[in-house]
Length: 293
Ligand code: SF4
Image 1 (tube, rainbow, N blue to C red):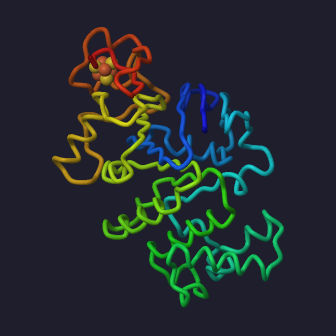
Image 2 (cartoon, protein in one colour):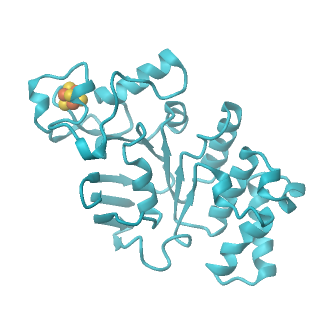
């Protein structure tokens, strides 16, 4: 079990994440969904052991009963891997793909070069990366192929946790579907956190959601019961697979509205929504809303 408890991230002026708590089971994909600015990537990066300069964090991350510090040696890369939105940013443009995938095996795991190249090739084959393309440079490959290589690169280190941060955002719909399939295939046996603003992607994995808004958890669970989550879903049906334009804009973390952060945009808002809704259990979900029955 992966447990995150009361995790907050802040600058010296405002919070980016506020007391985020959730649990995730091994082998079950946790989809972290929300609009841009919700704090999804900050959360994913932190769990992968990456924090931008100037940010501070507190809270607890517990893996199988053991409290861990994601910034200790041996966590990033070795126990937690990350697949980034832009695969081109994951690779050194001067190196061929096979060499790039092998490099962390040499420097992080201390493998010999020959052994590392062998394991890199095995993982590239597992994600159905074509053999001929292994000796090519990143700029010679499509985004979809390079994203496969980025997945192989993260998995070759055999992390317990894999964070996929918007891995399909830079791709066309058919390639998005392929990358989702690859990620699903390799979720077995590890904790997989899939960050997305595409409702389509969320529904593809569709078993366990964490919906963030303004750096706060609106809802966690297997269903969409919260008004914000329902609006995301409804707009998808109406408009296509892009996350909808719900009325208004999500707030910047430096100017969060009082009470429920969604109240300025929520069609169900009432005067009680000016107070922070408590966390409640509704069916199998945990959510924050005054008006979900
Ligand atoms: S607490 Fe109020 S404003 Fe917030 S989601 Fe629920 S109904 Fe809407």
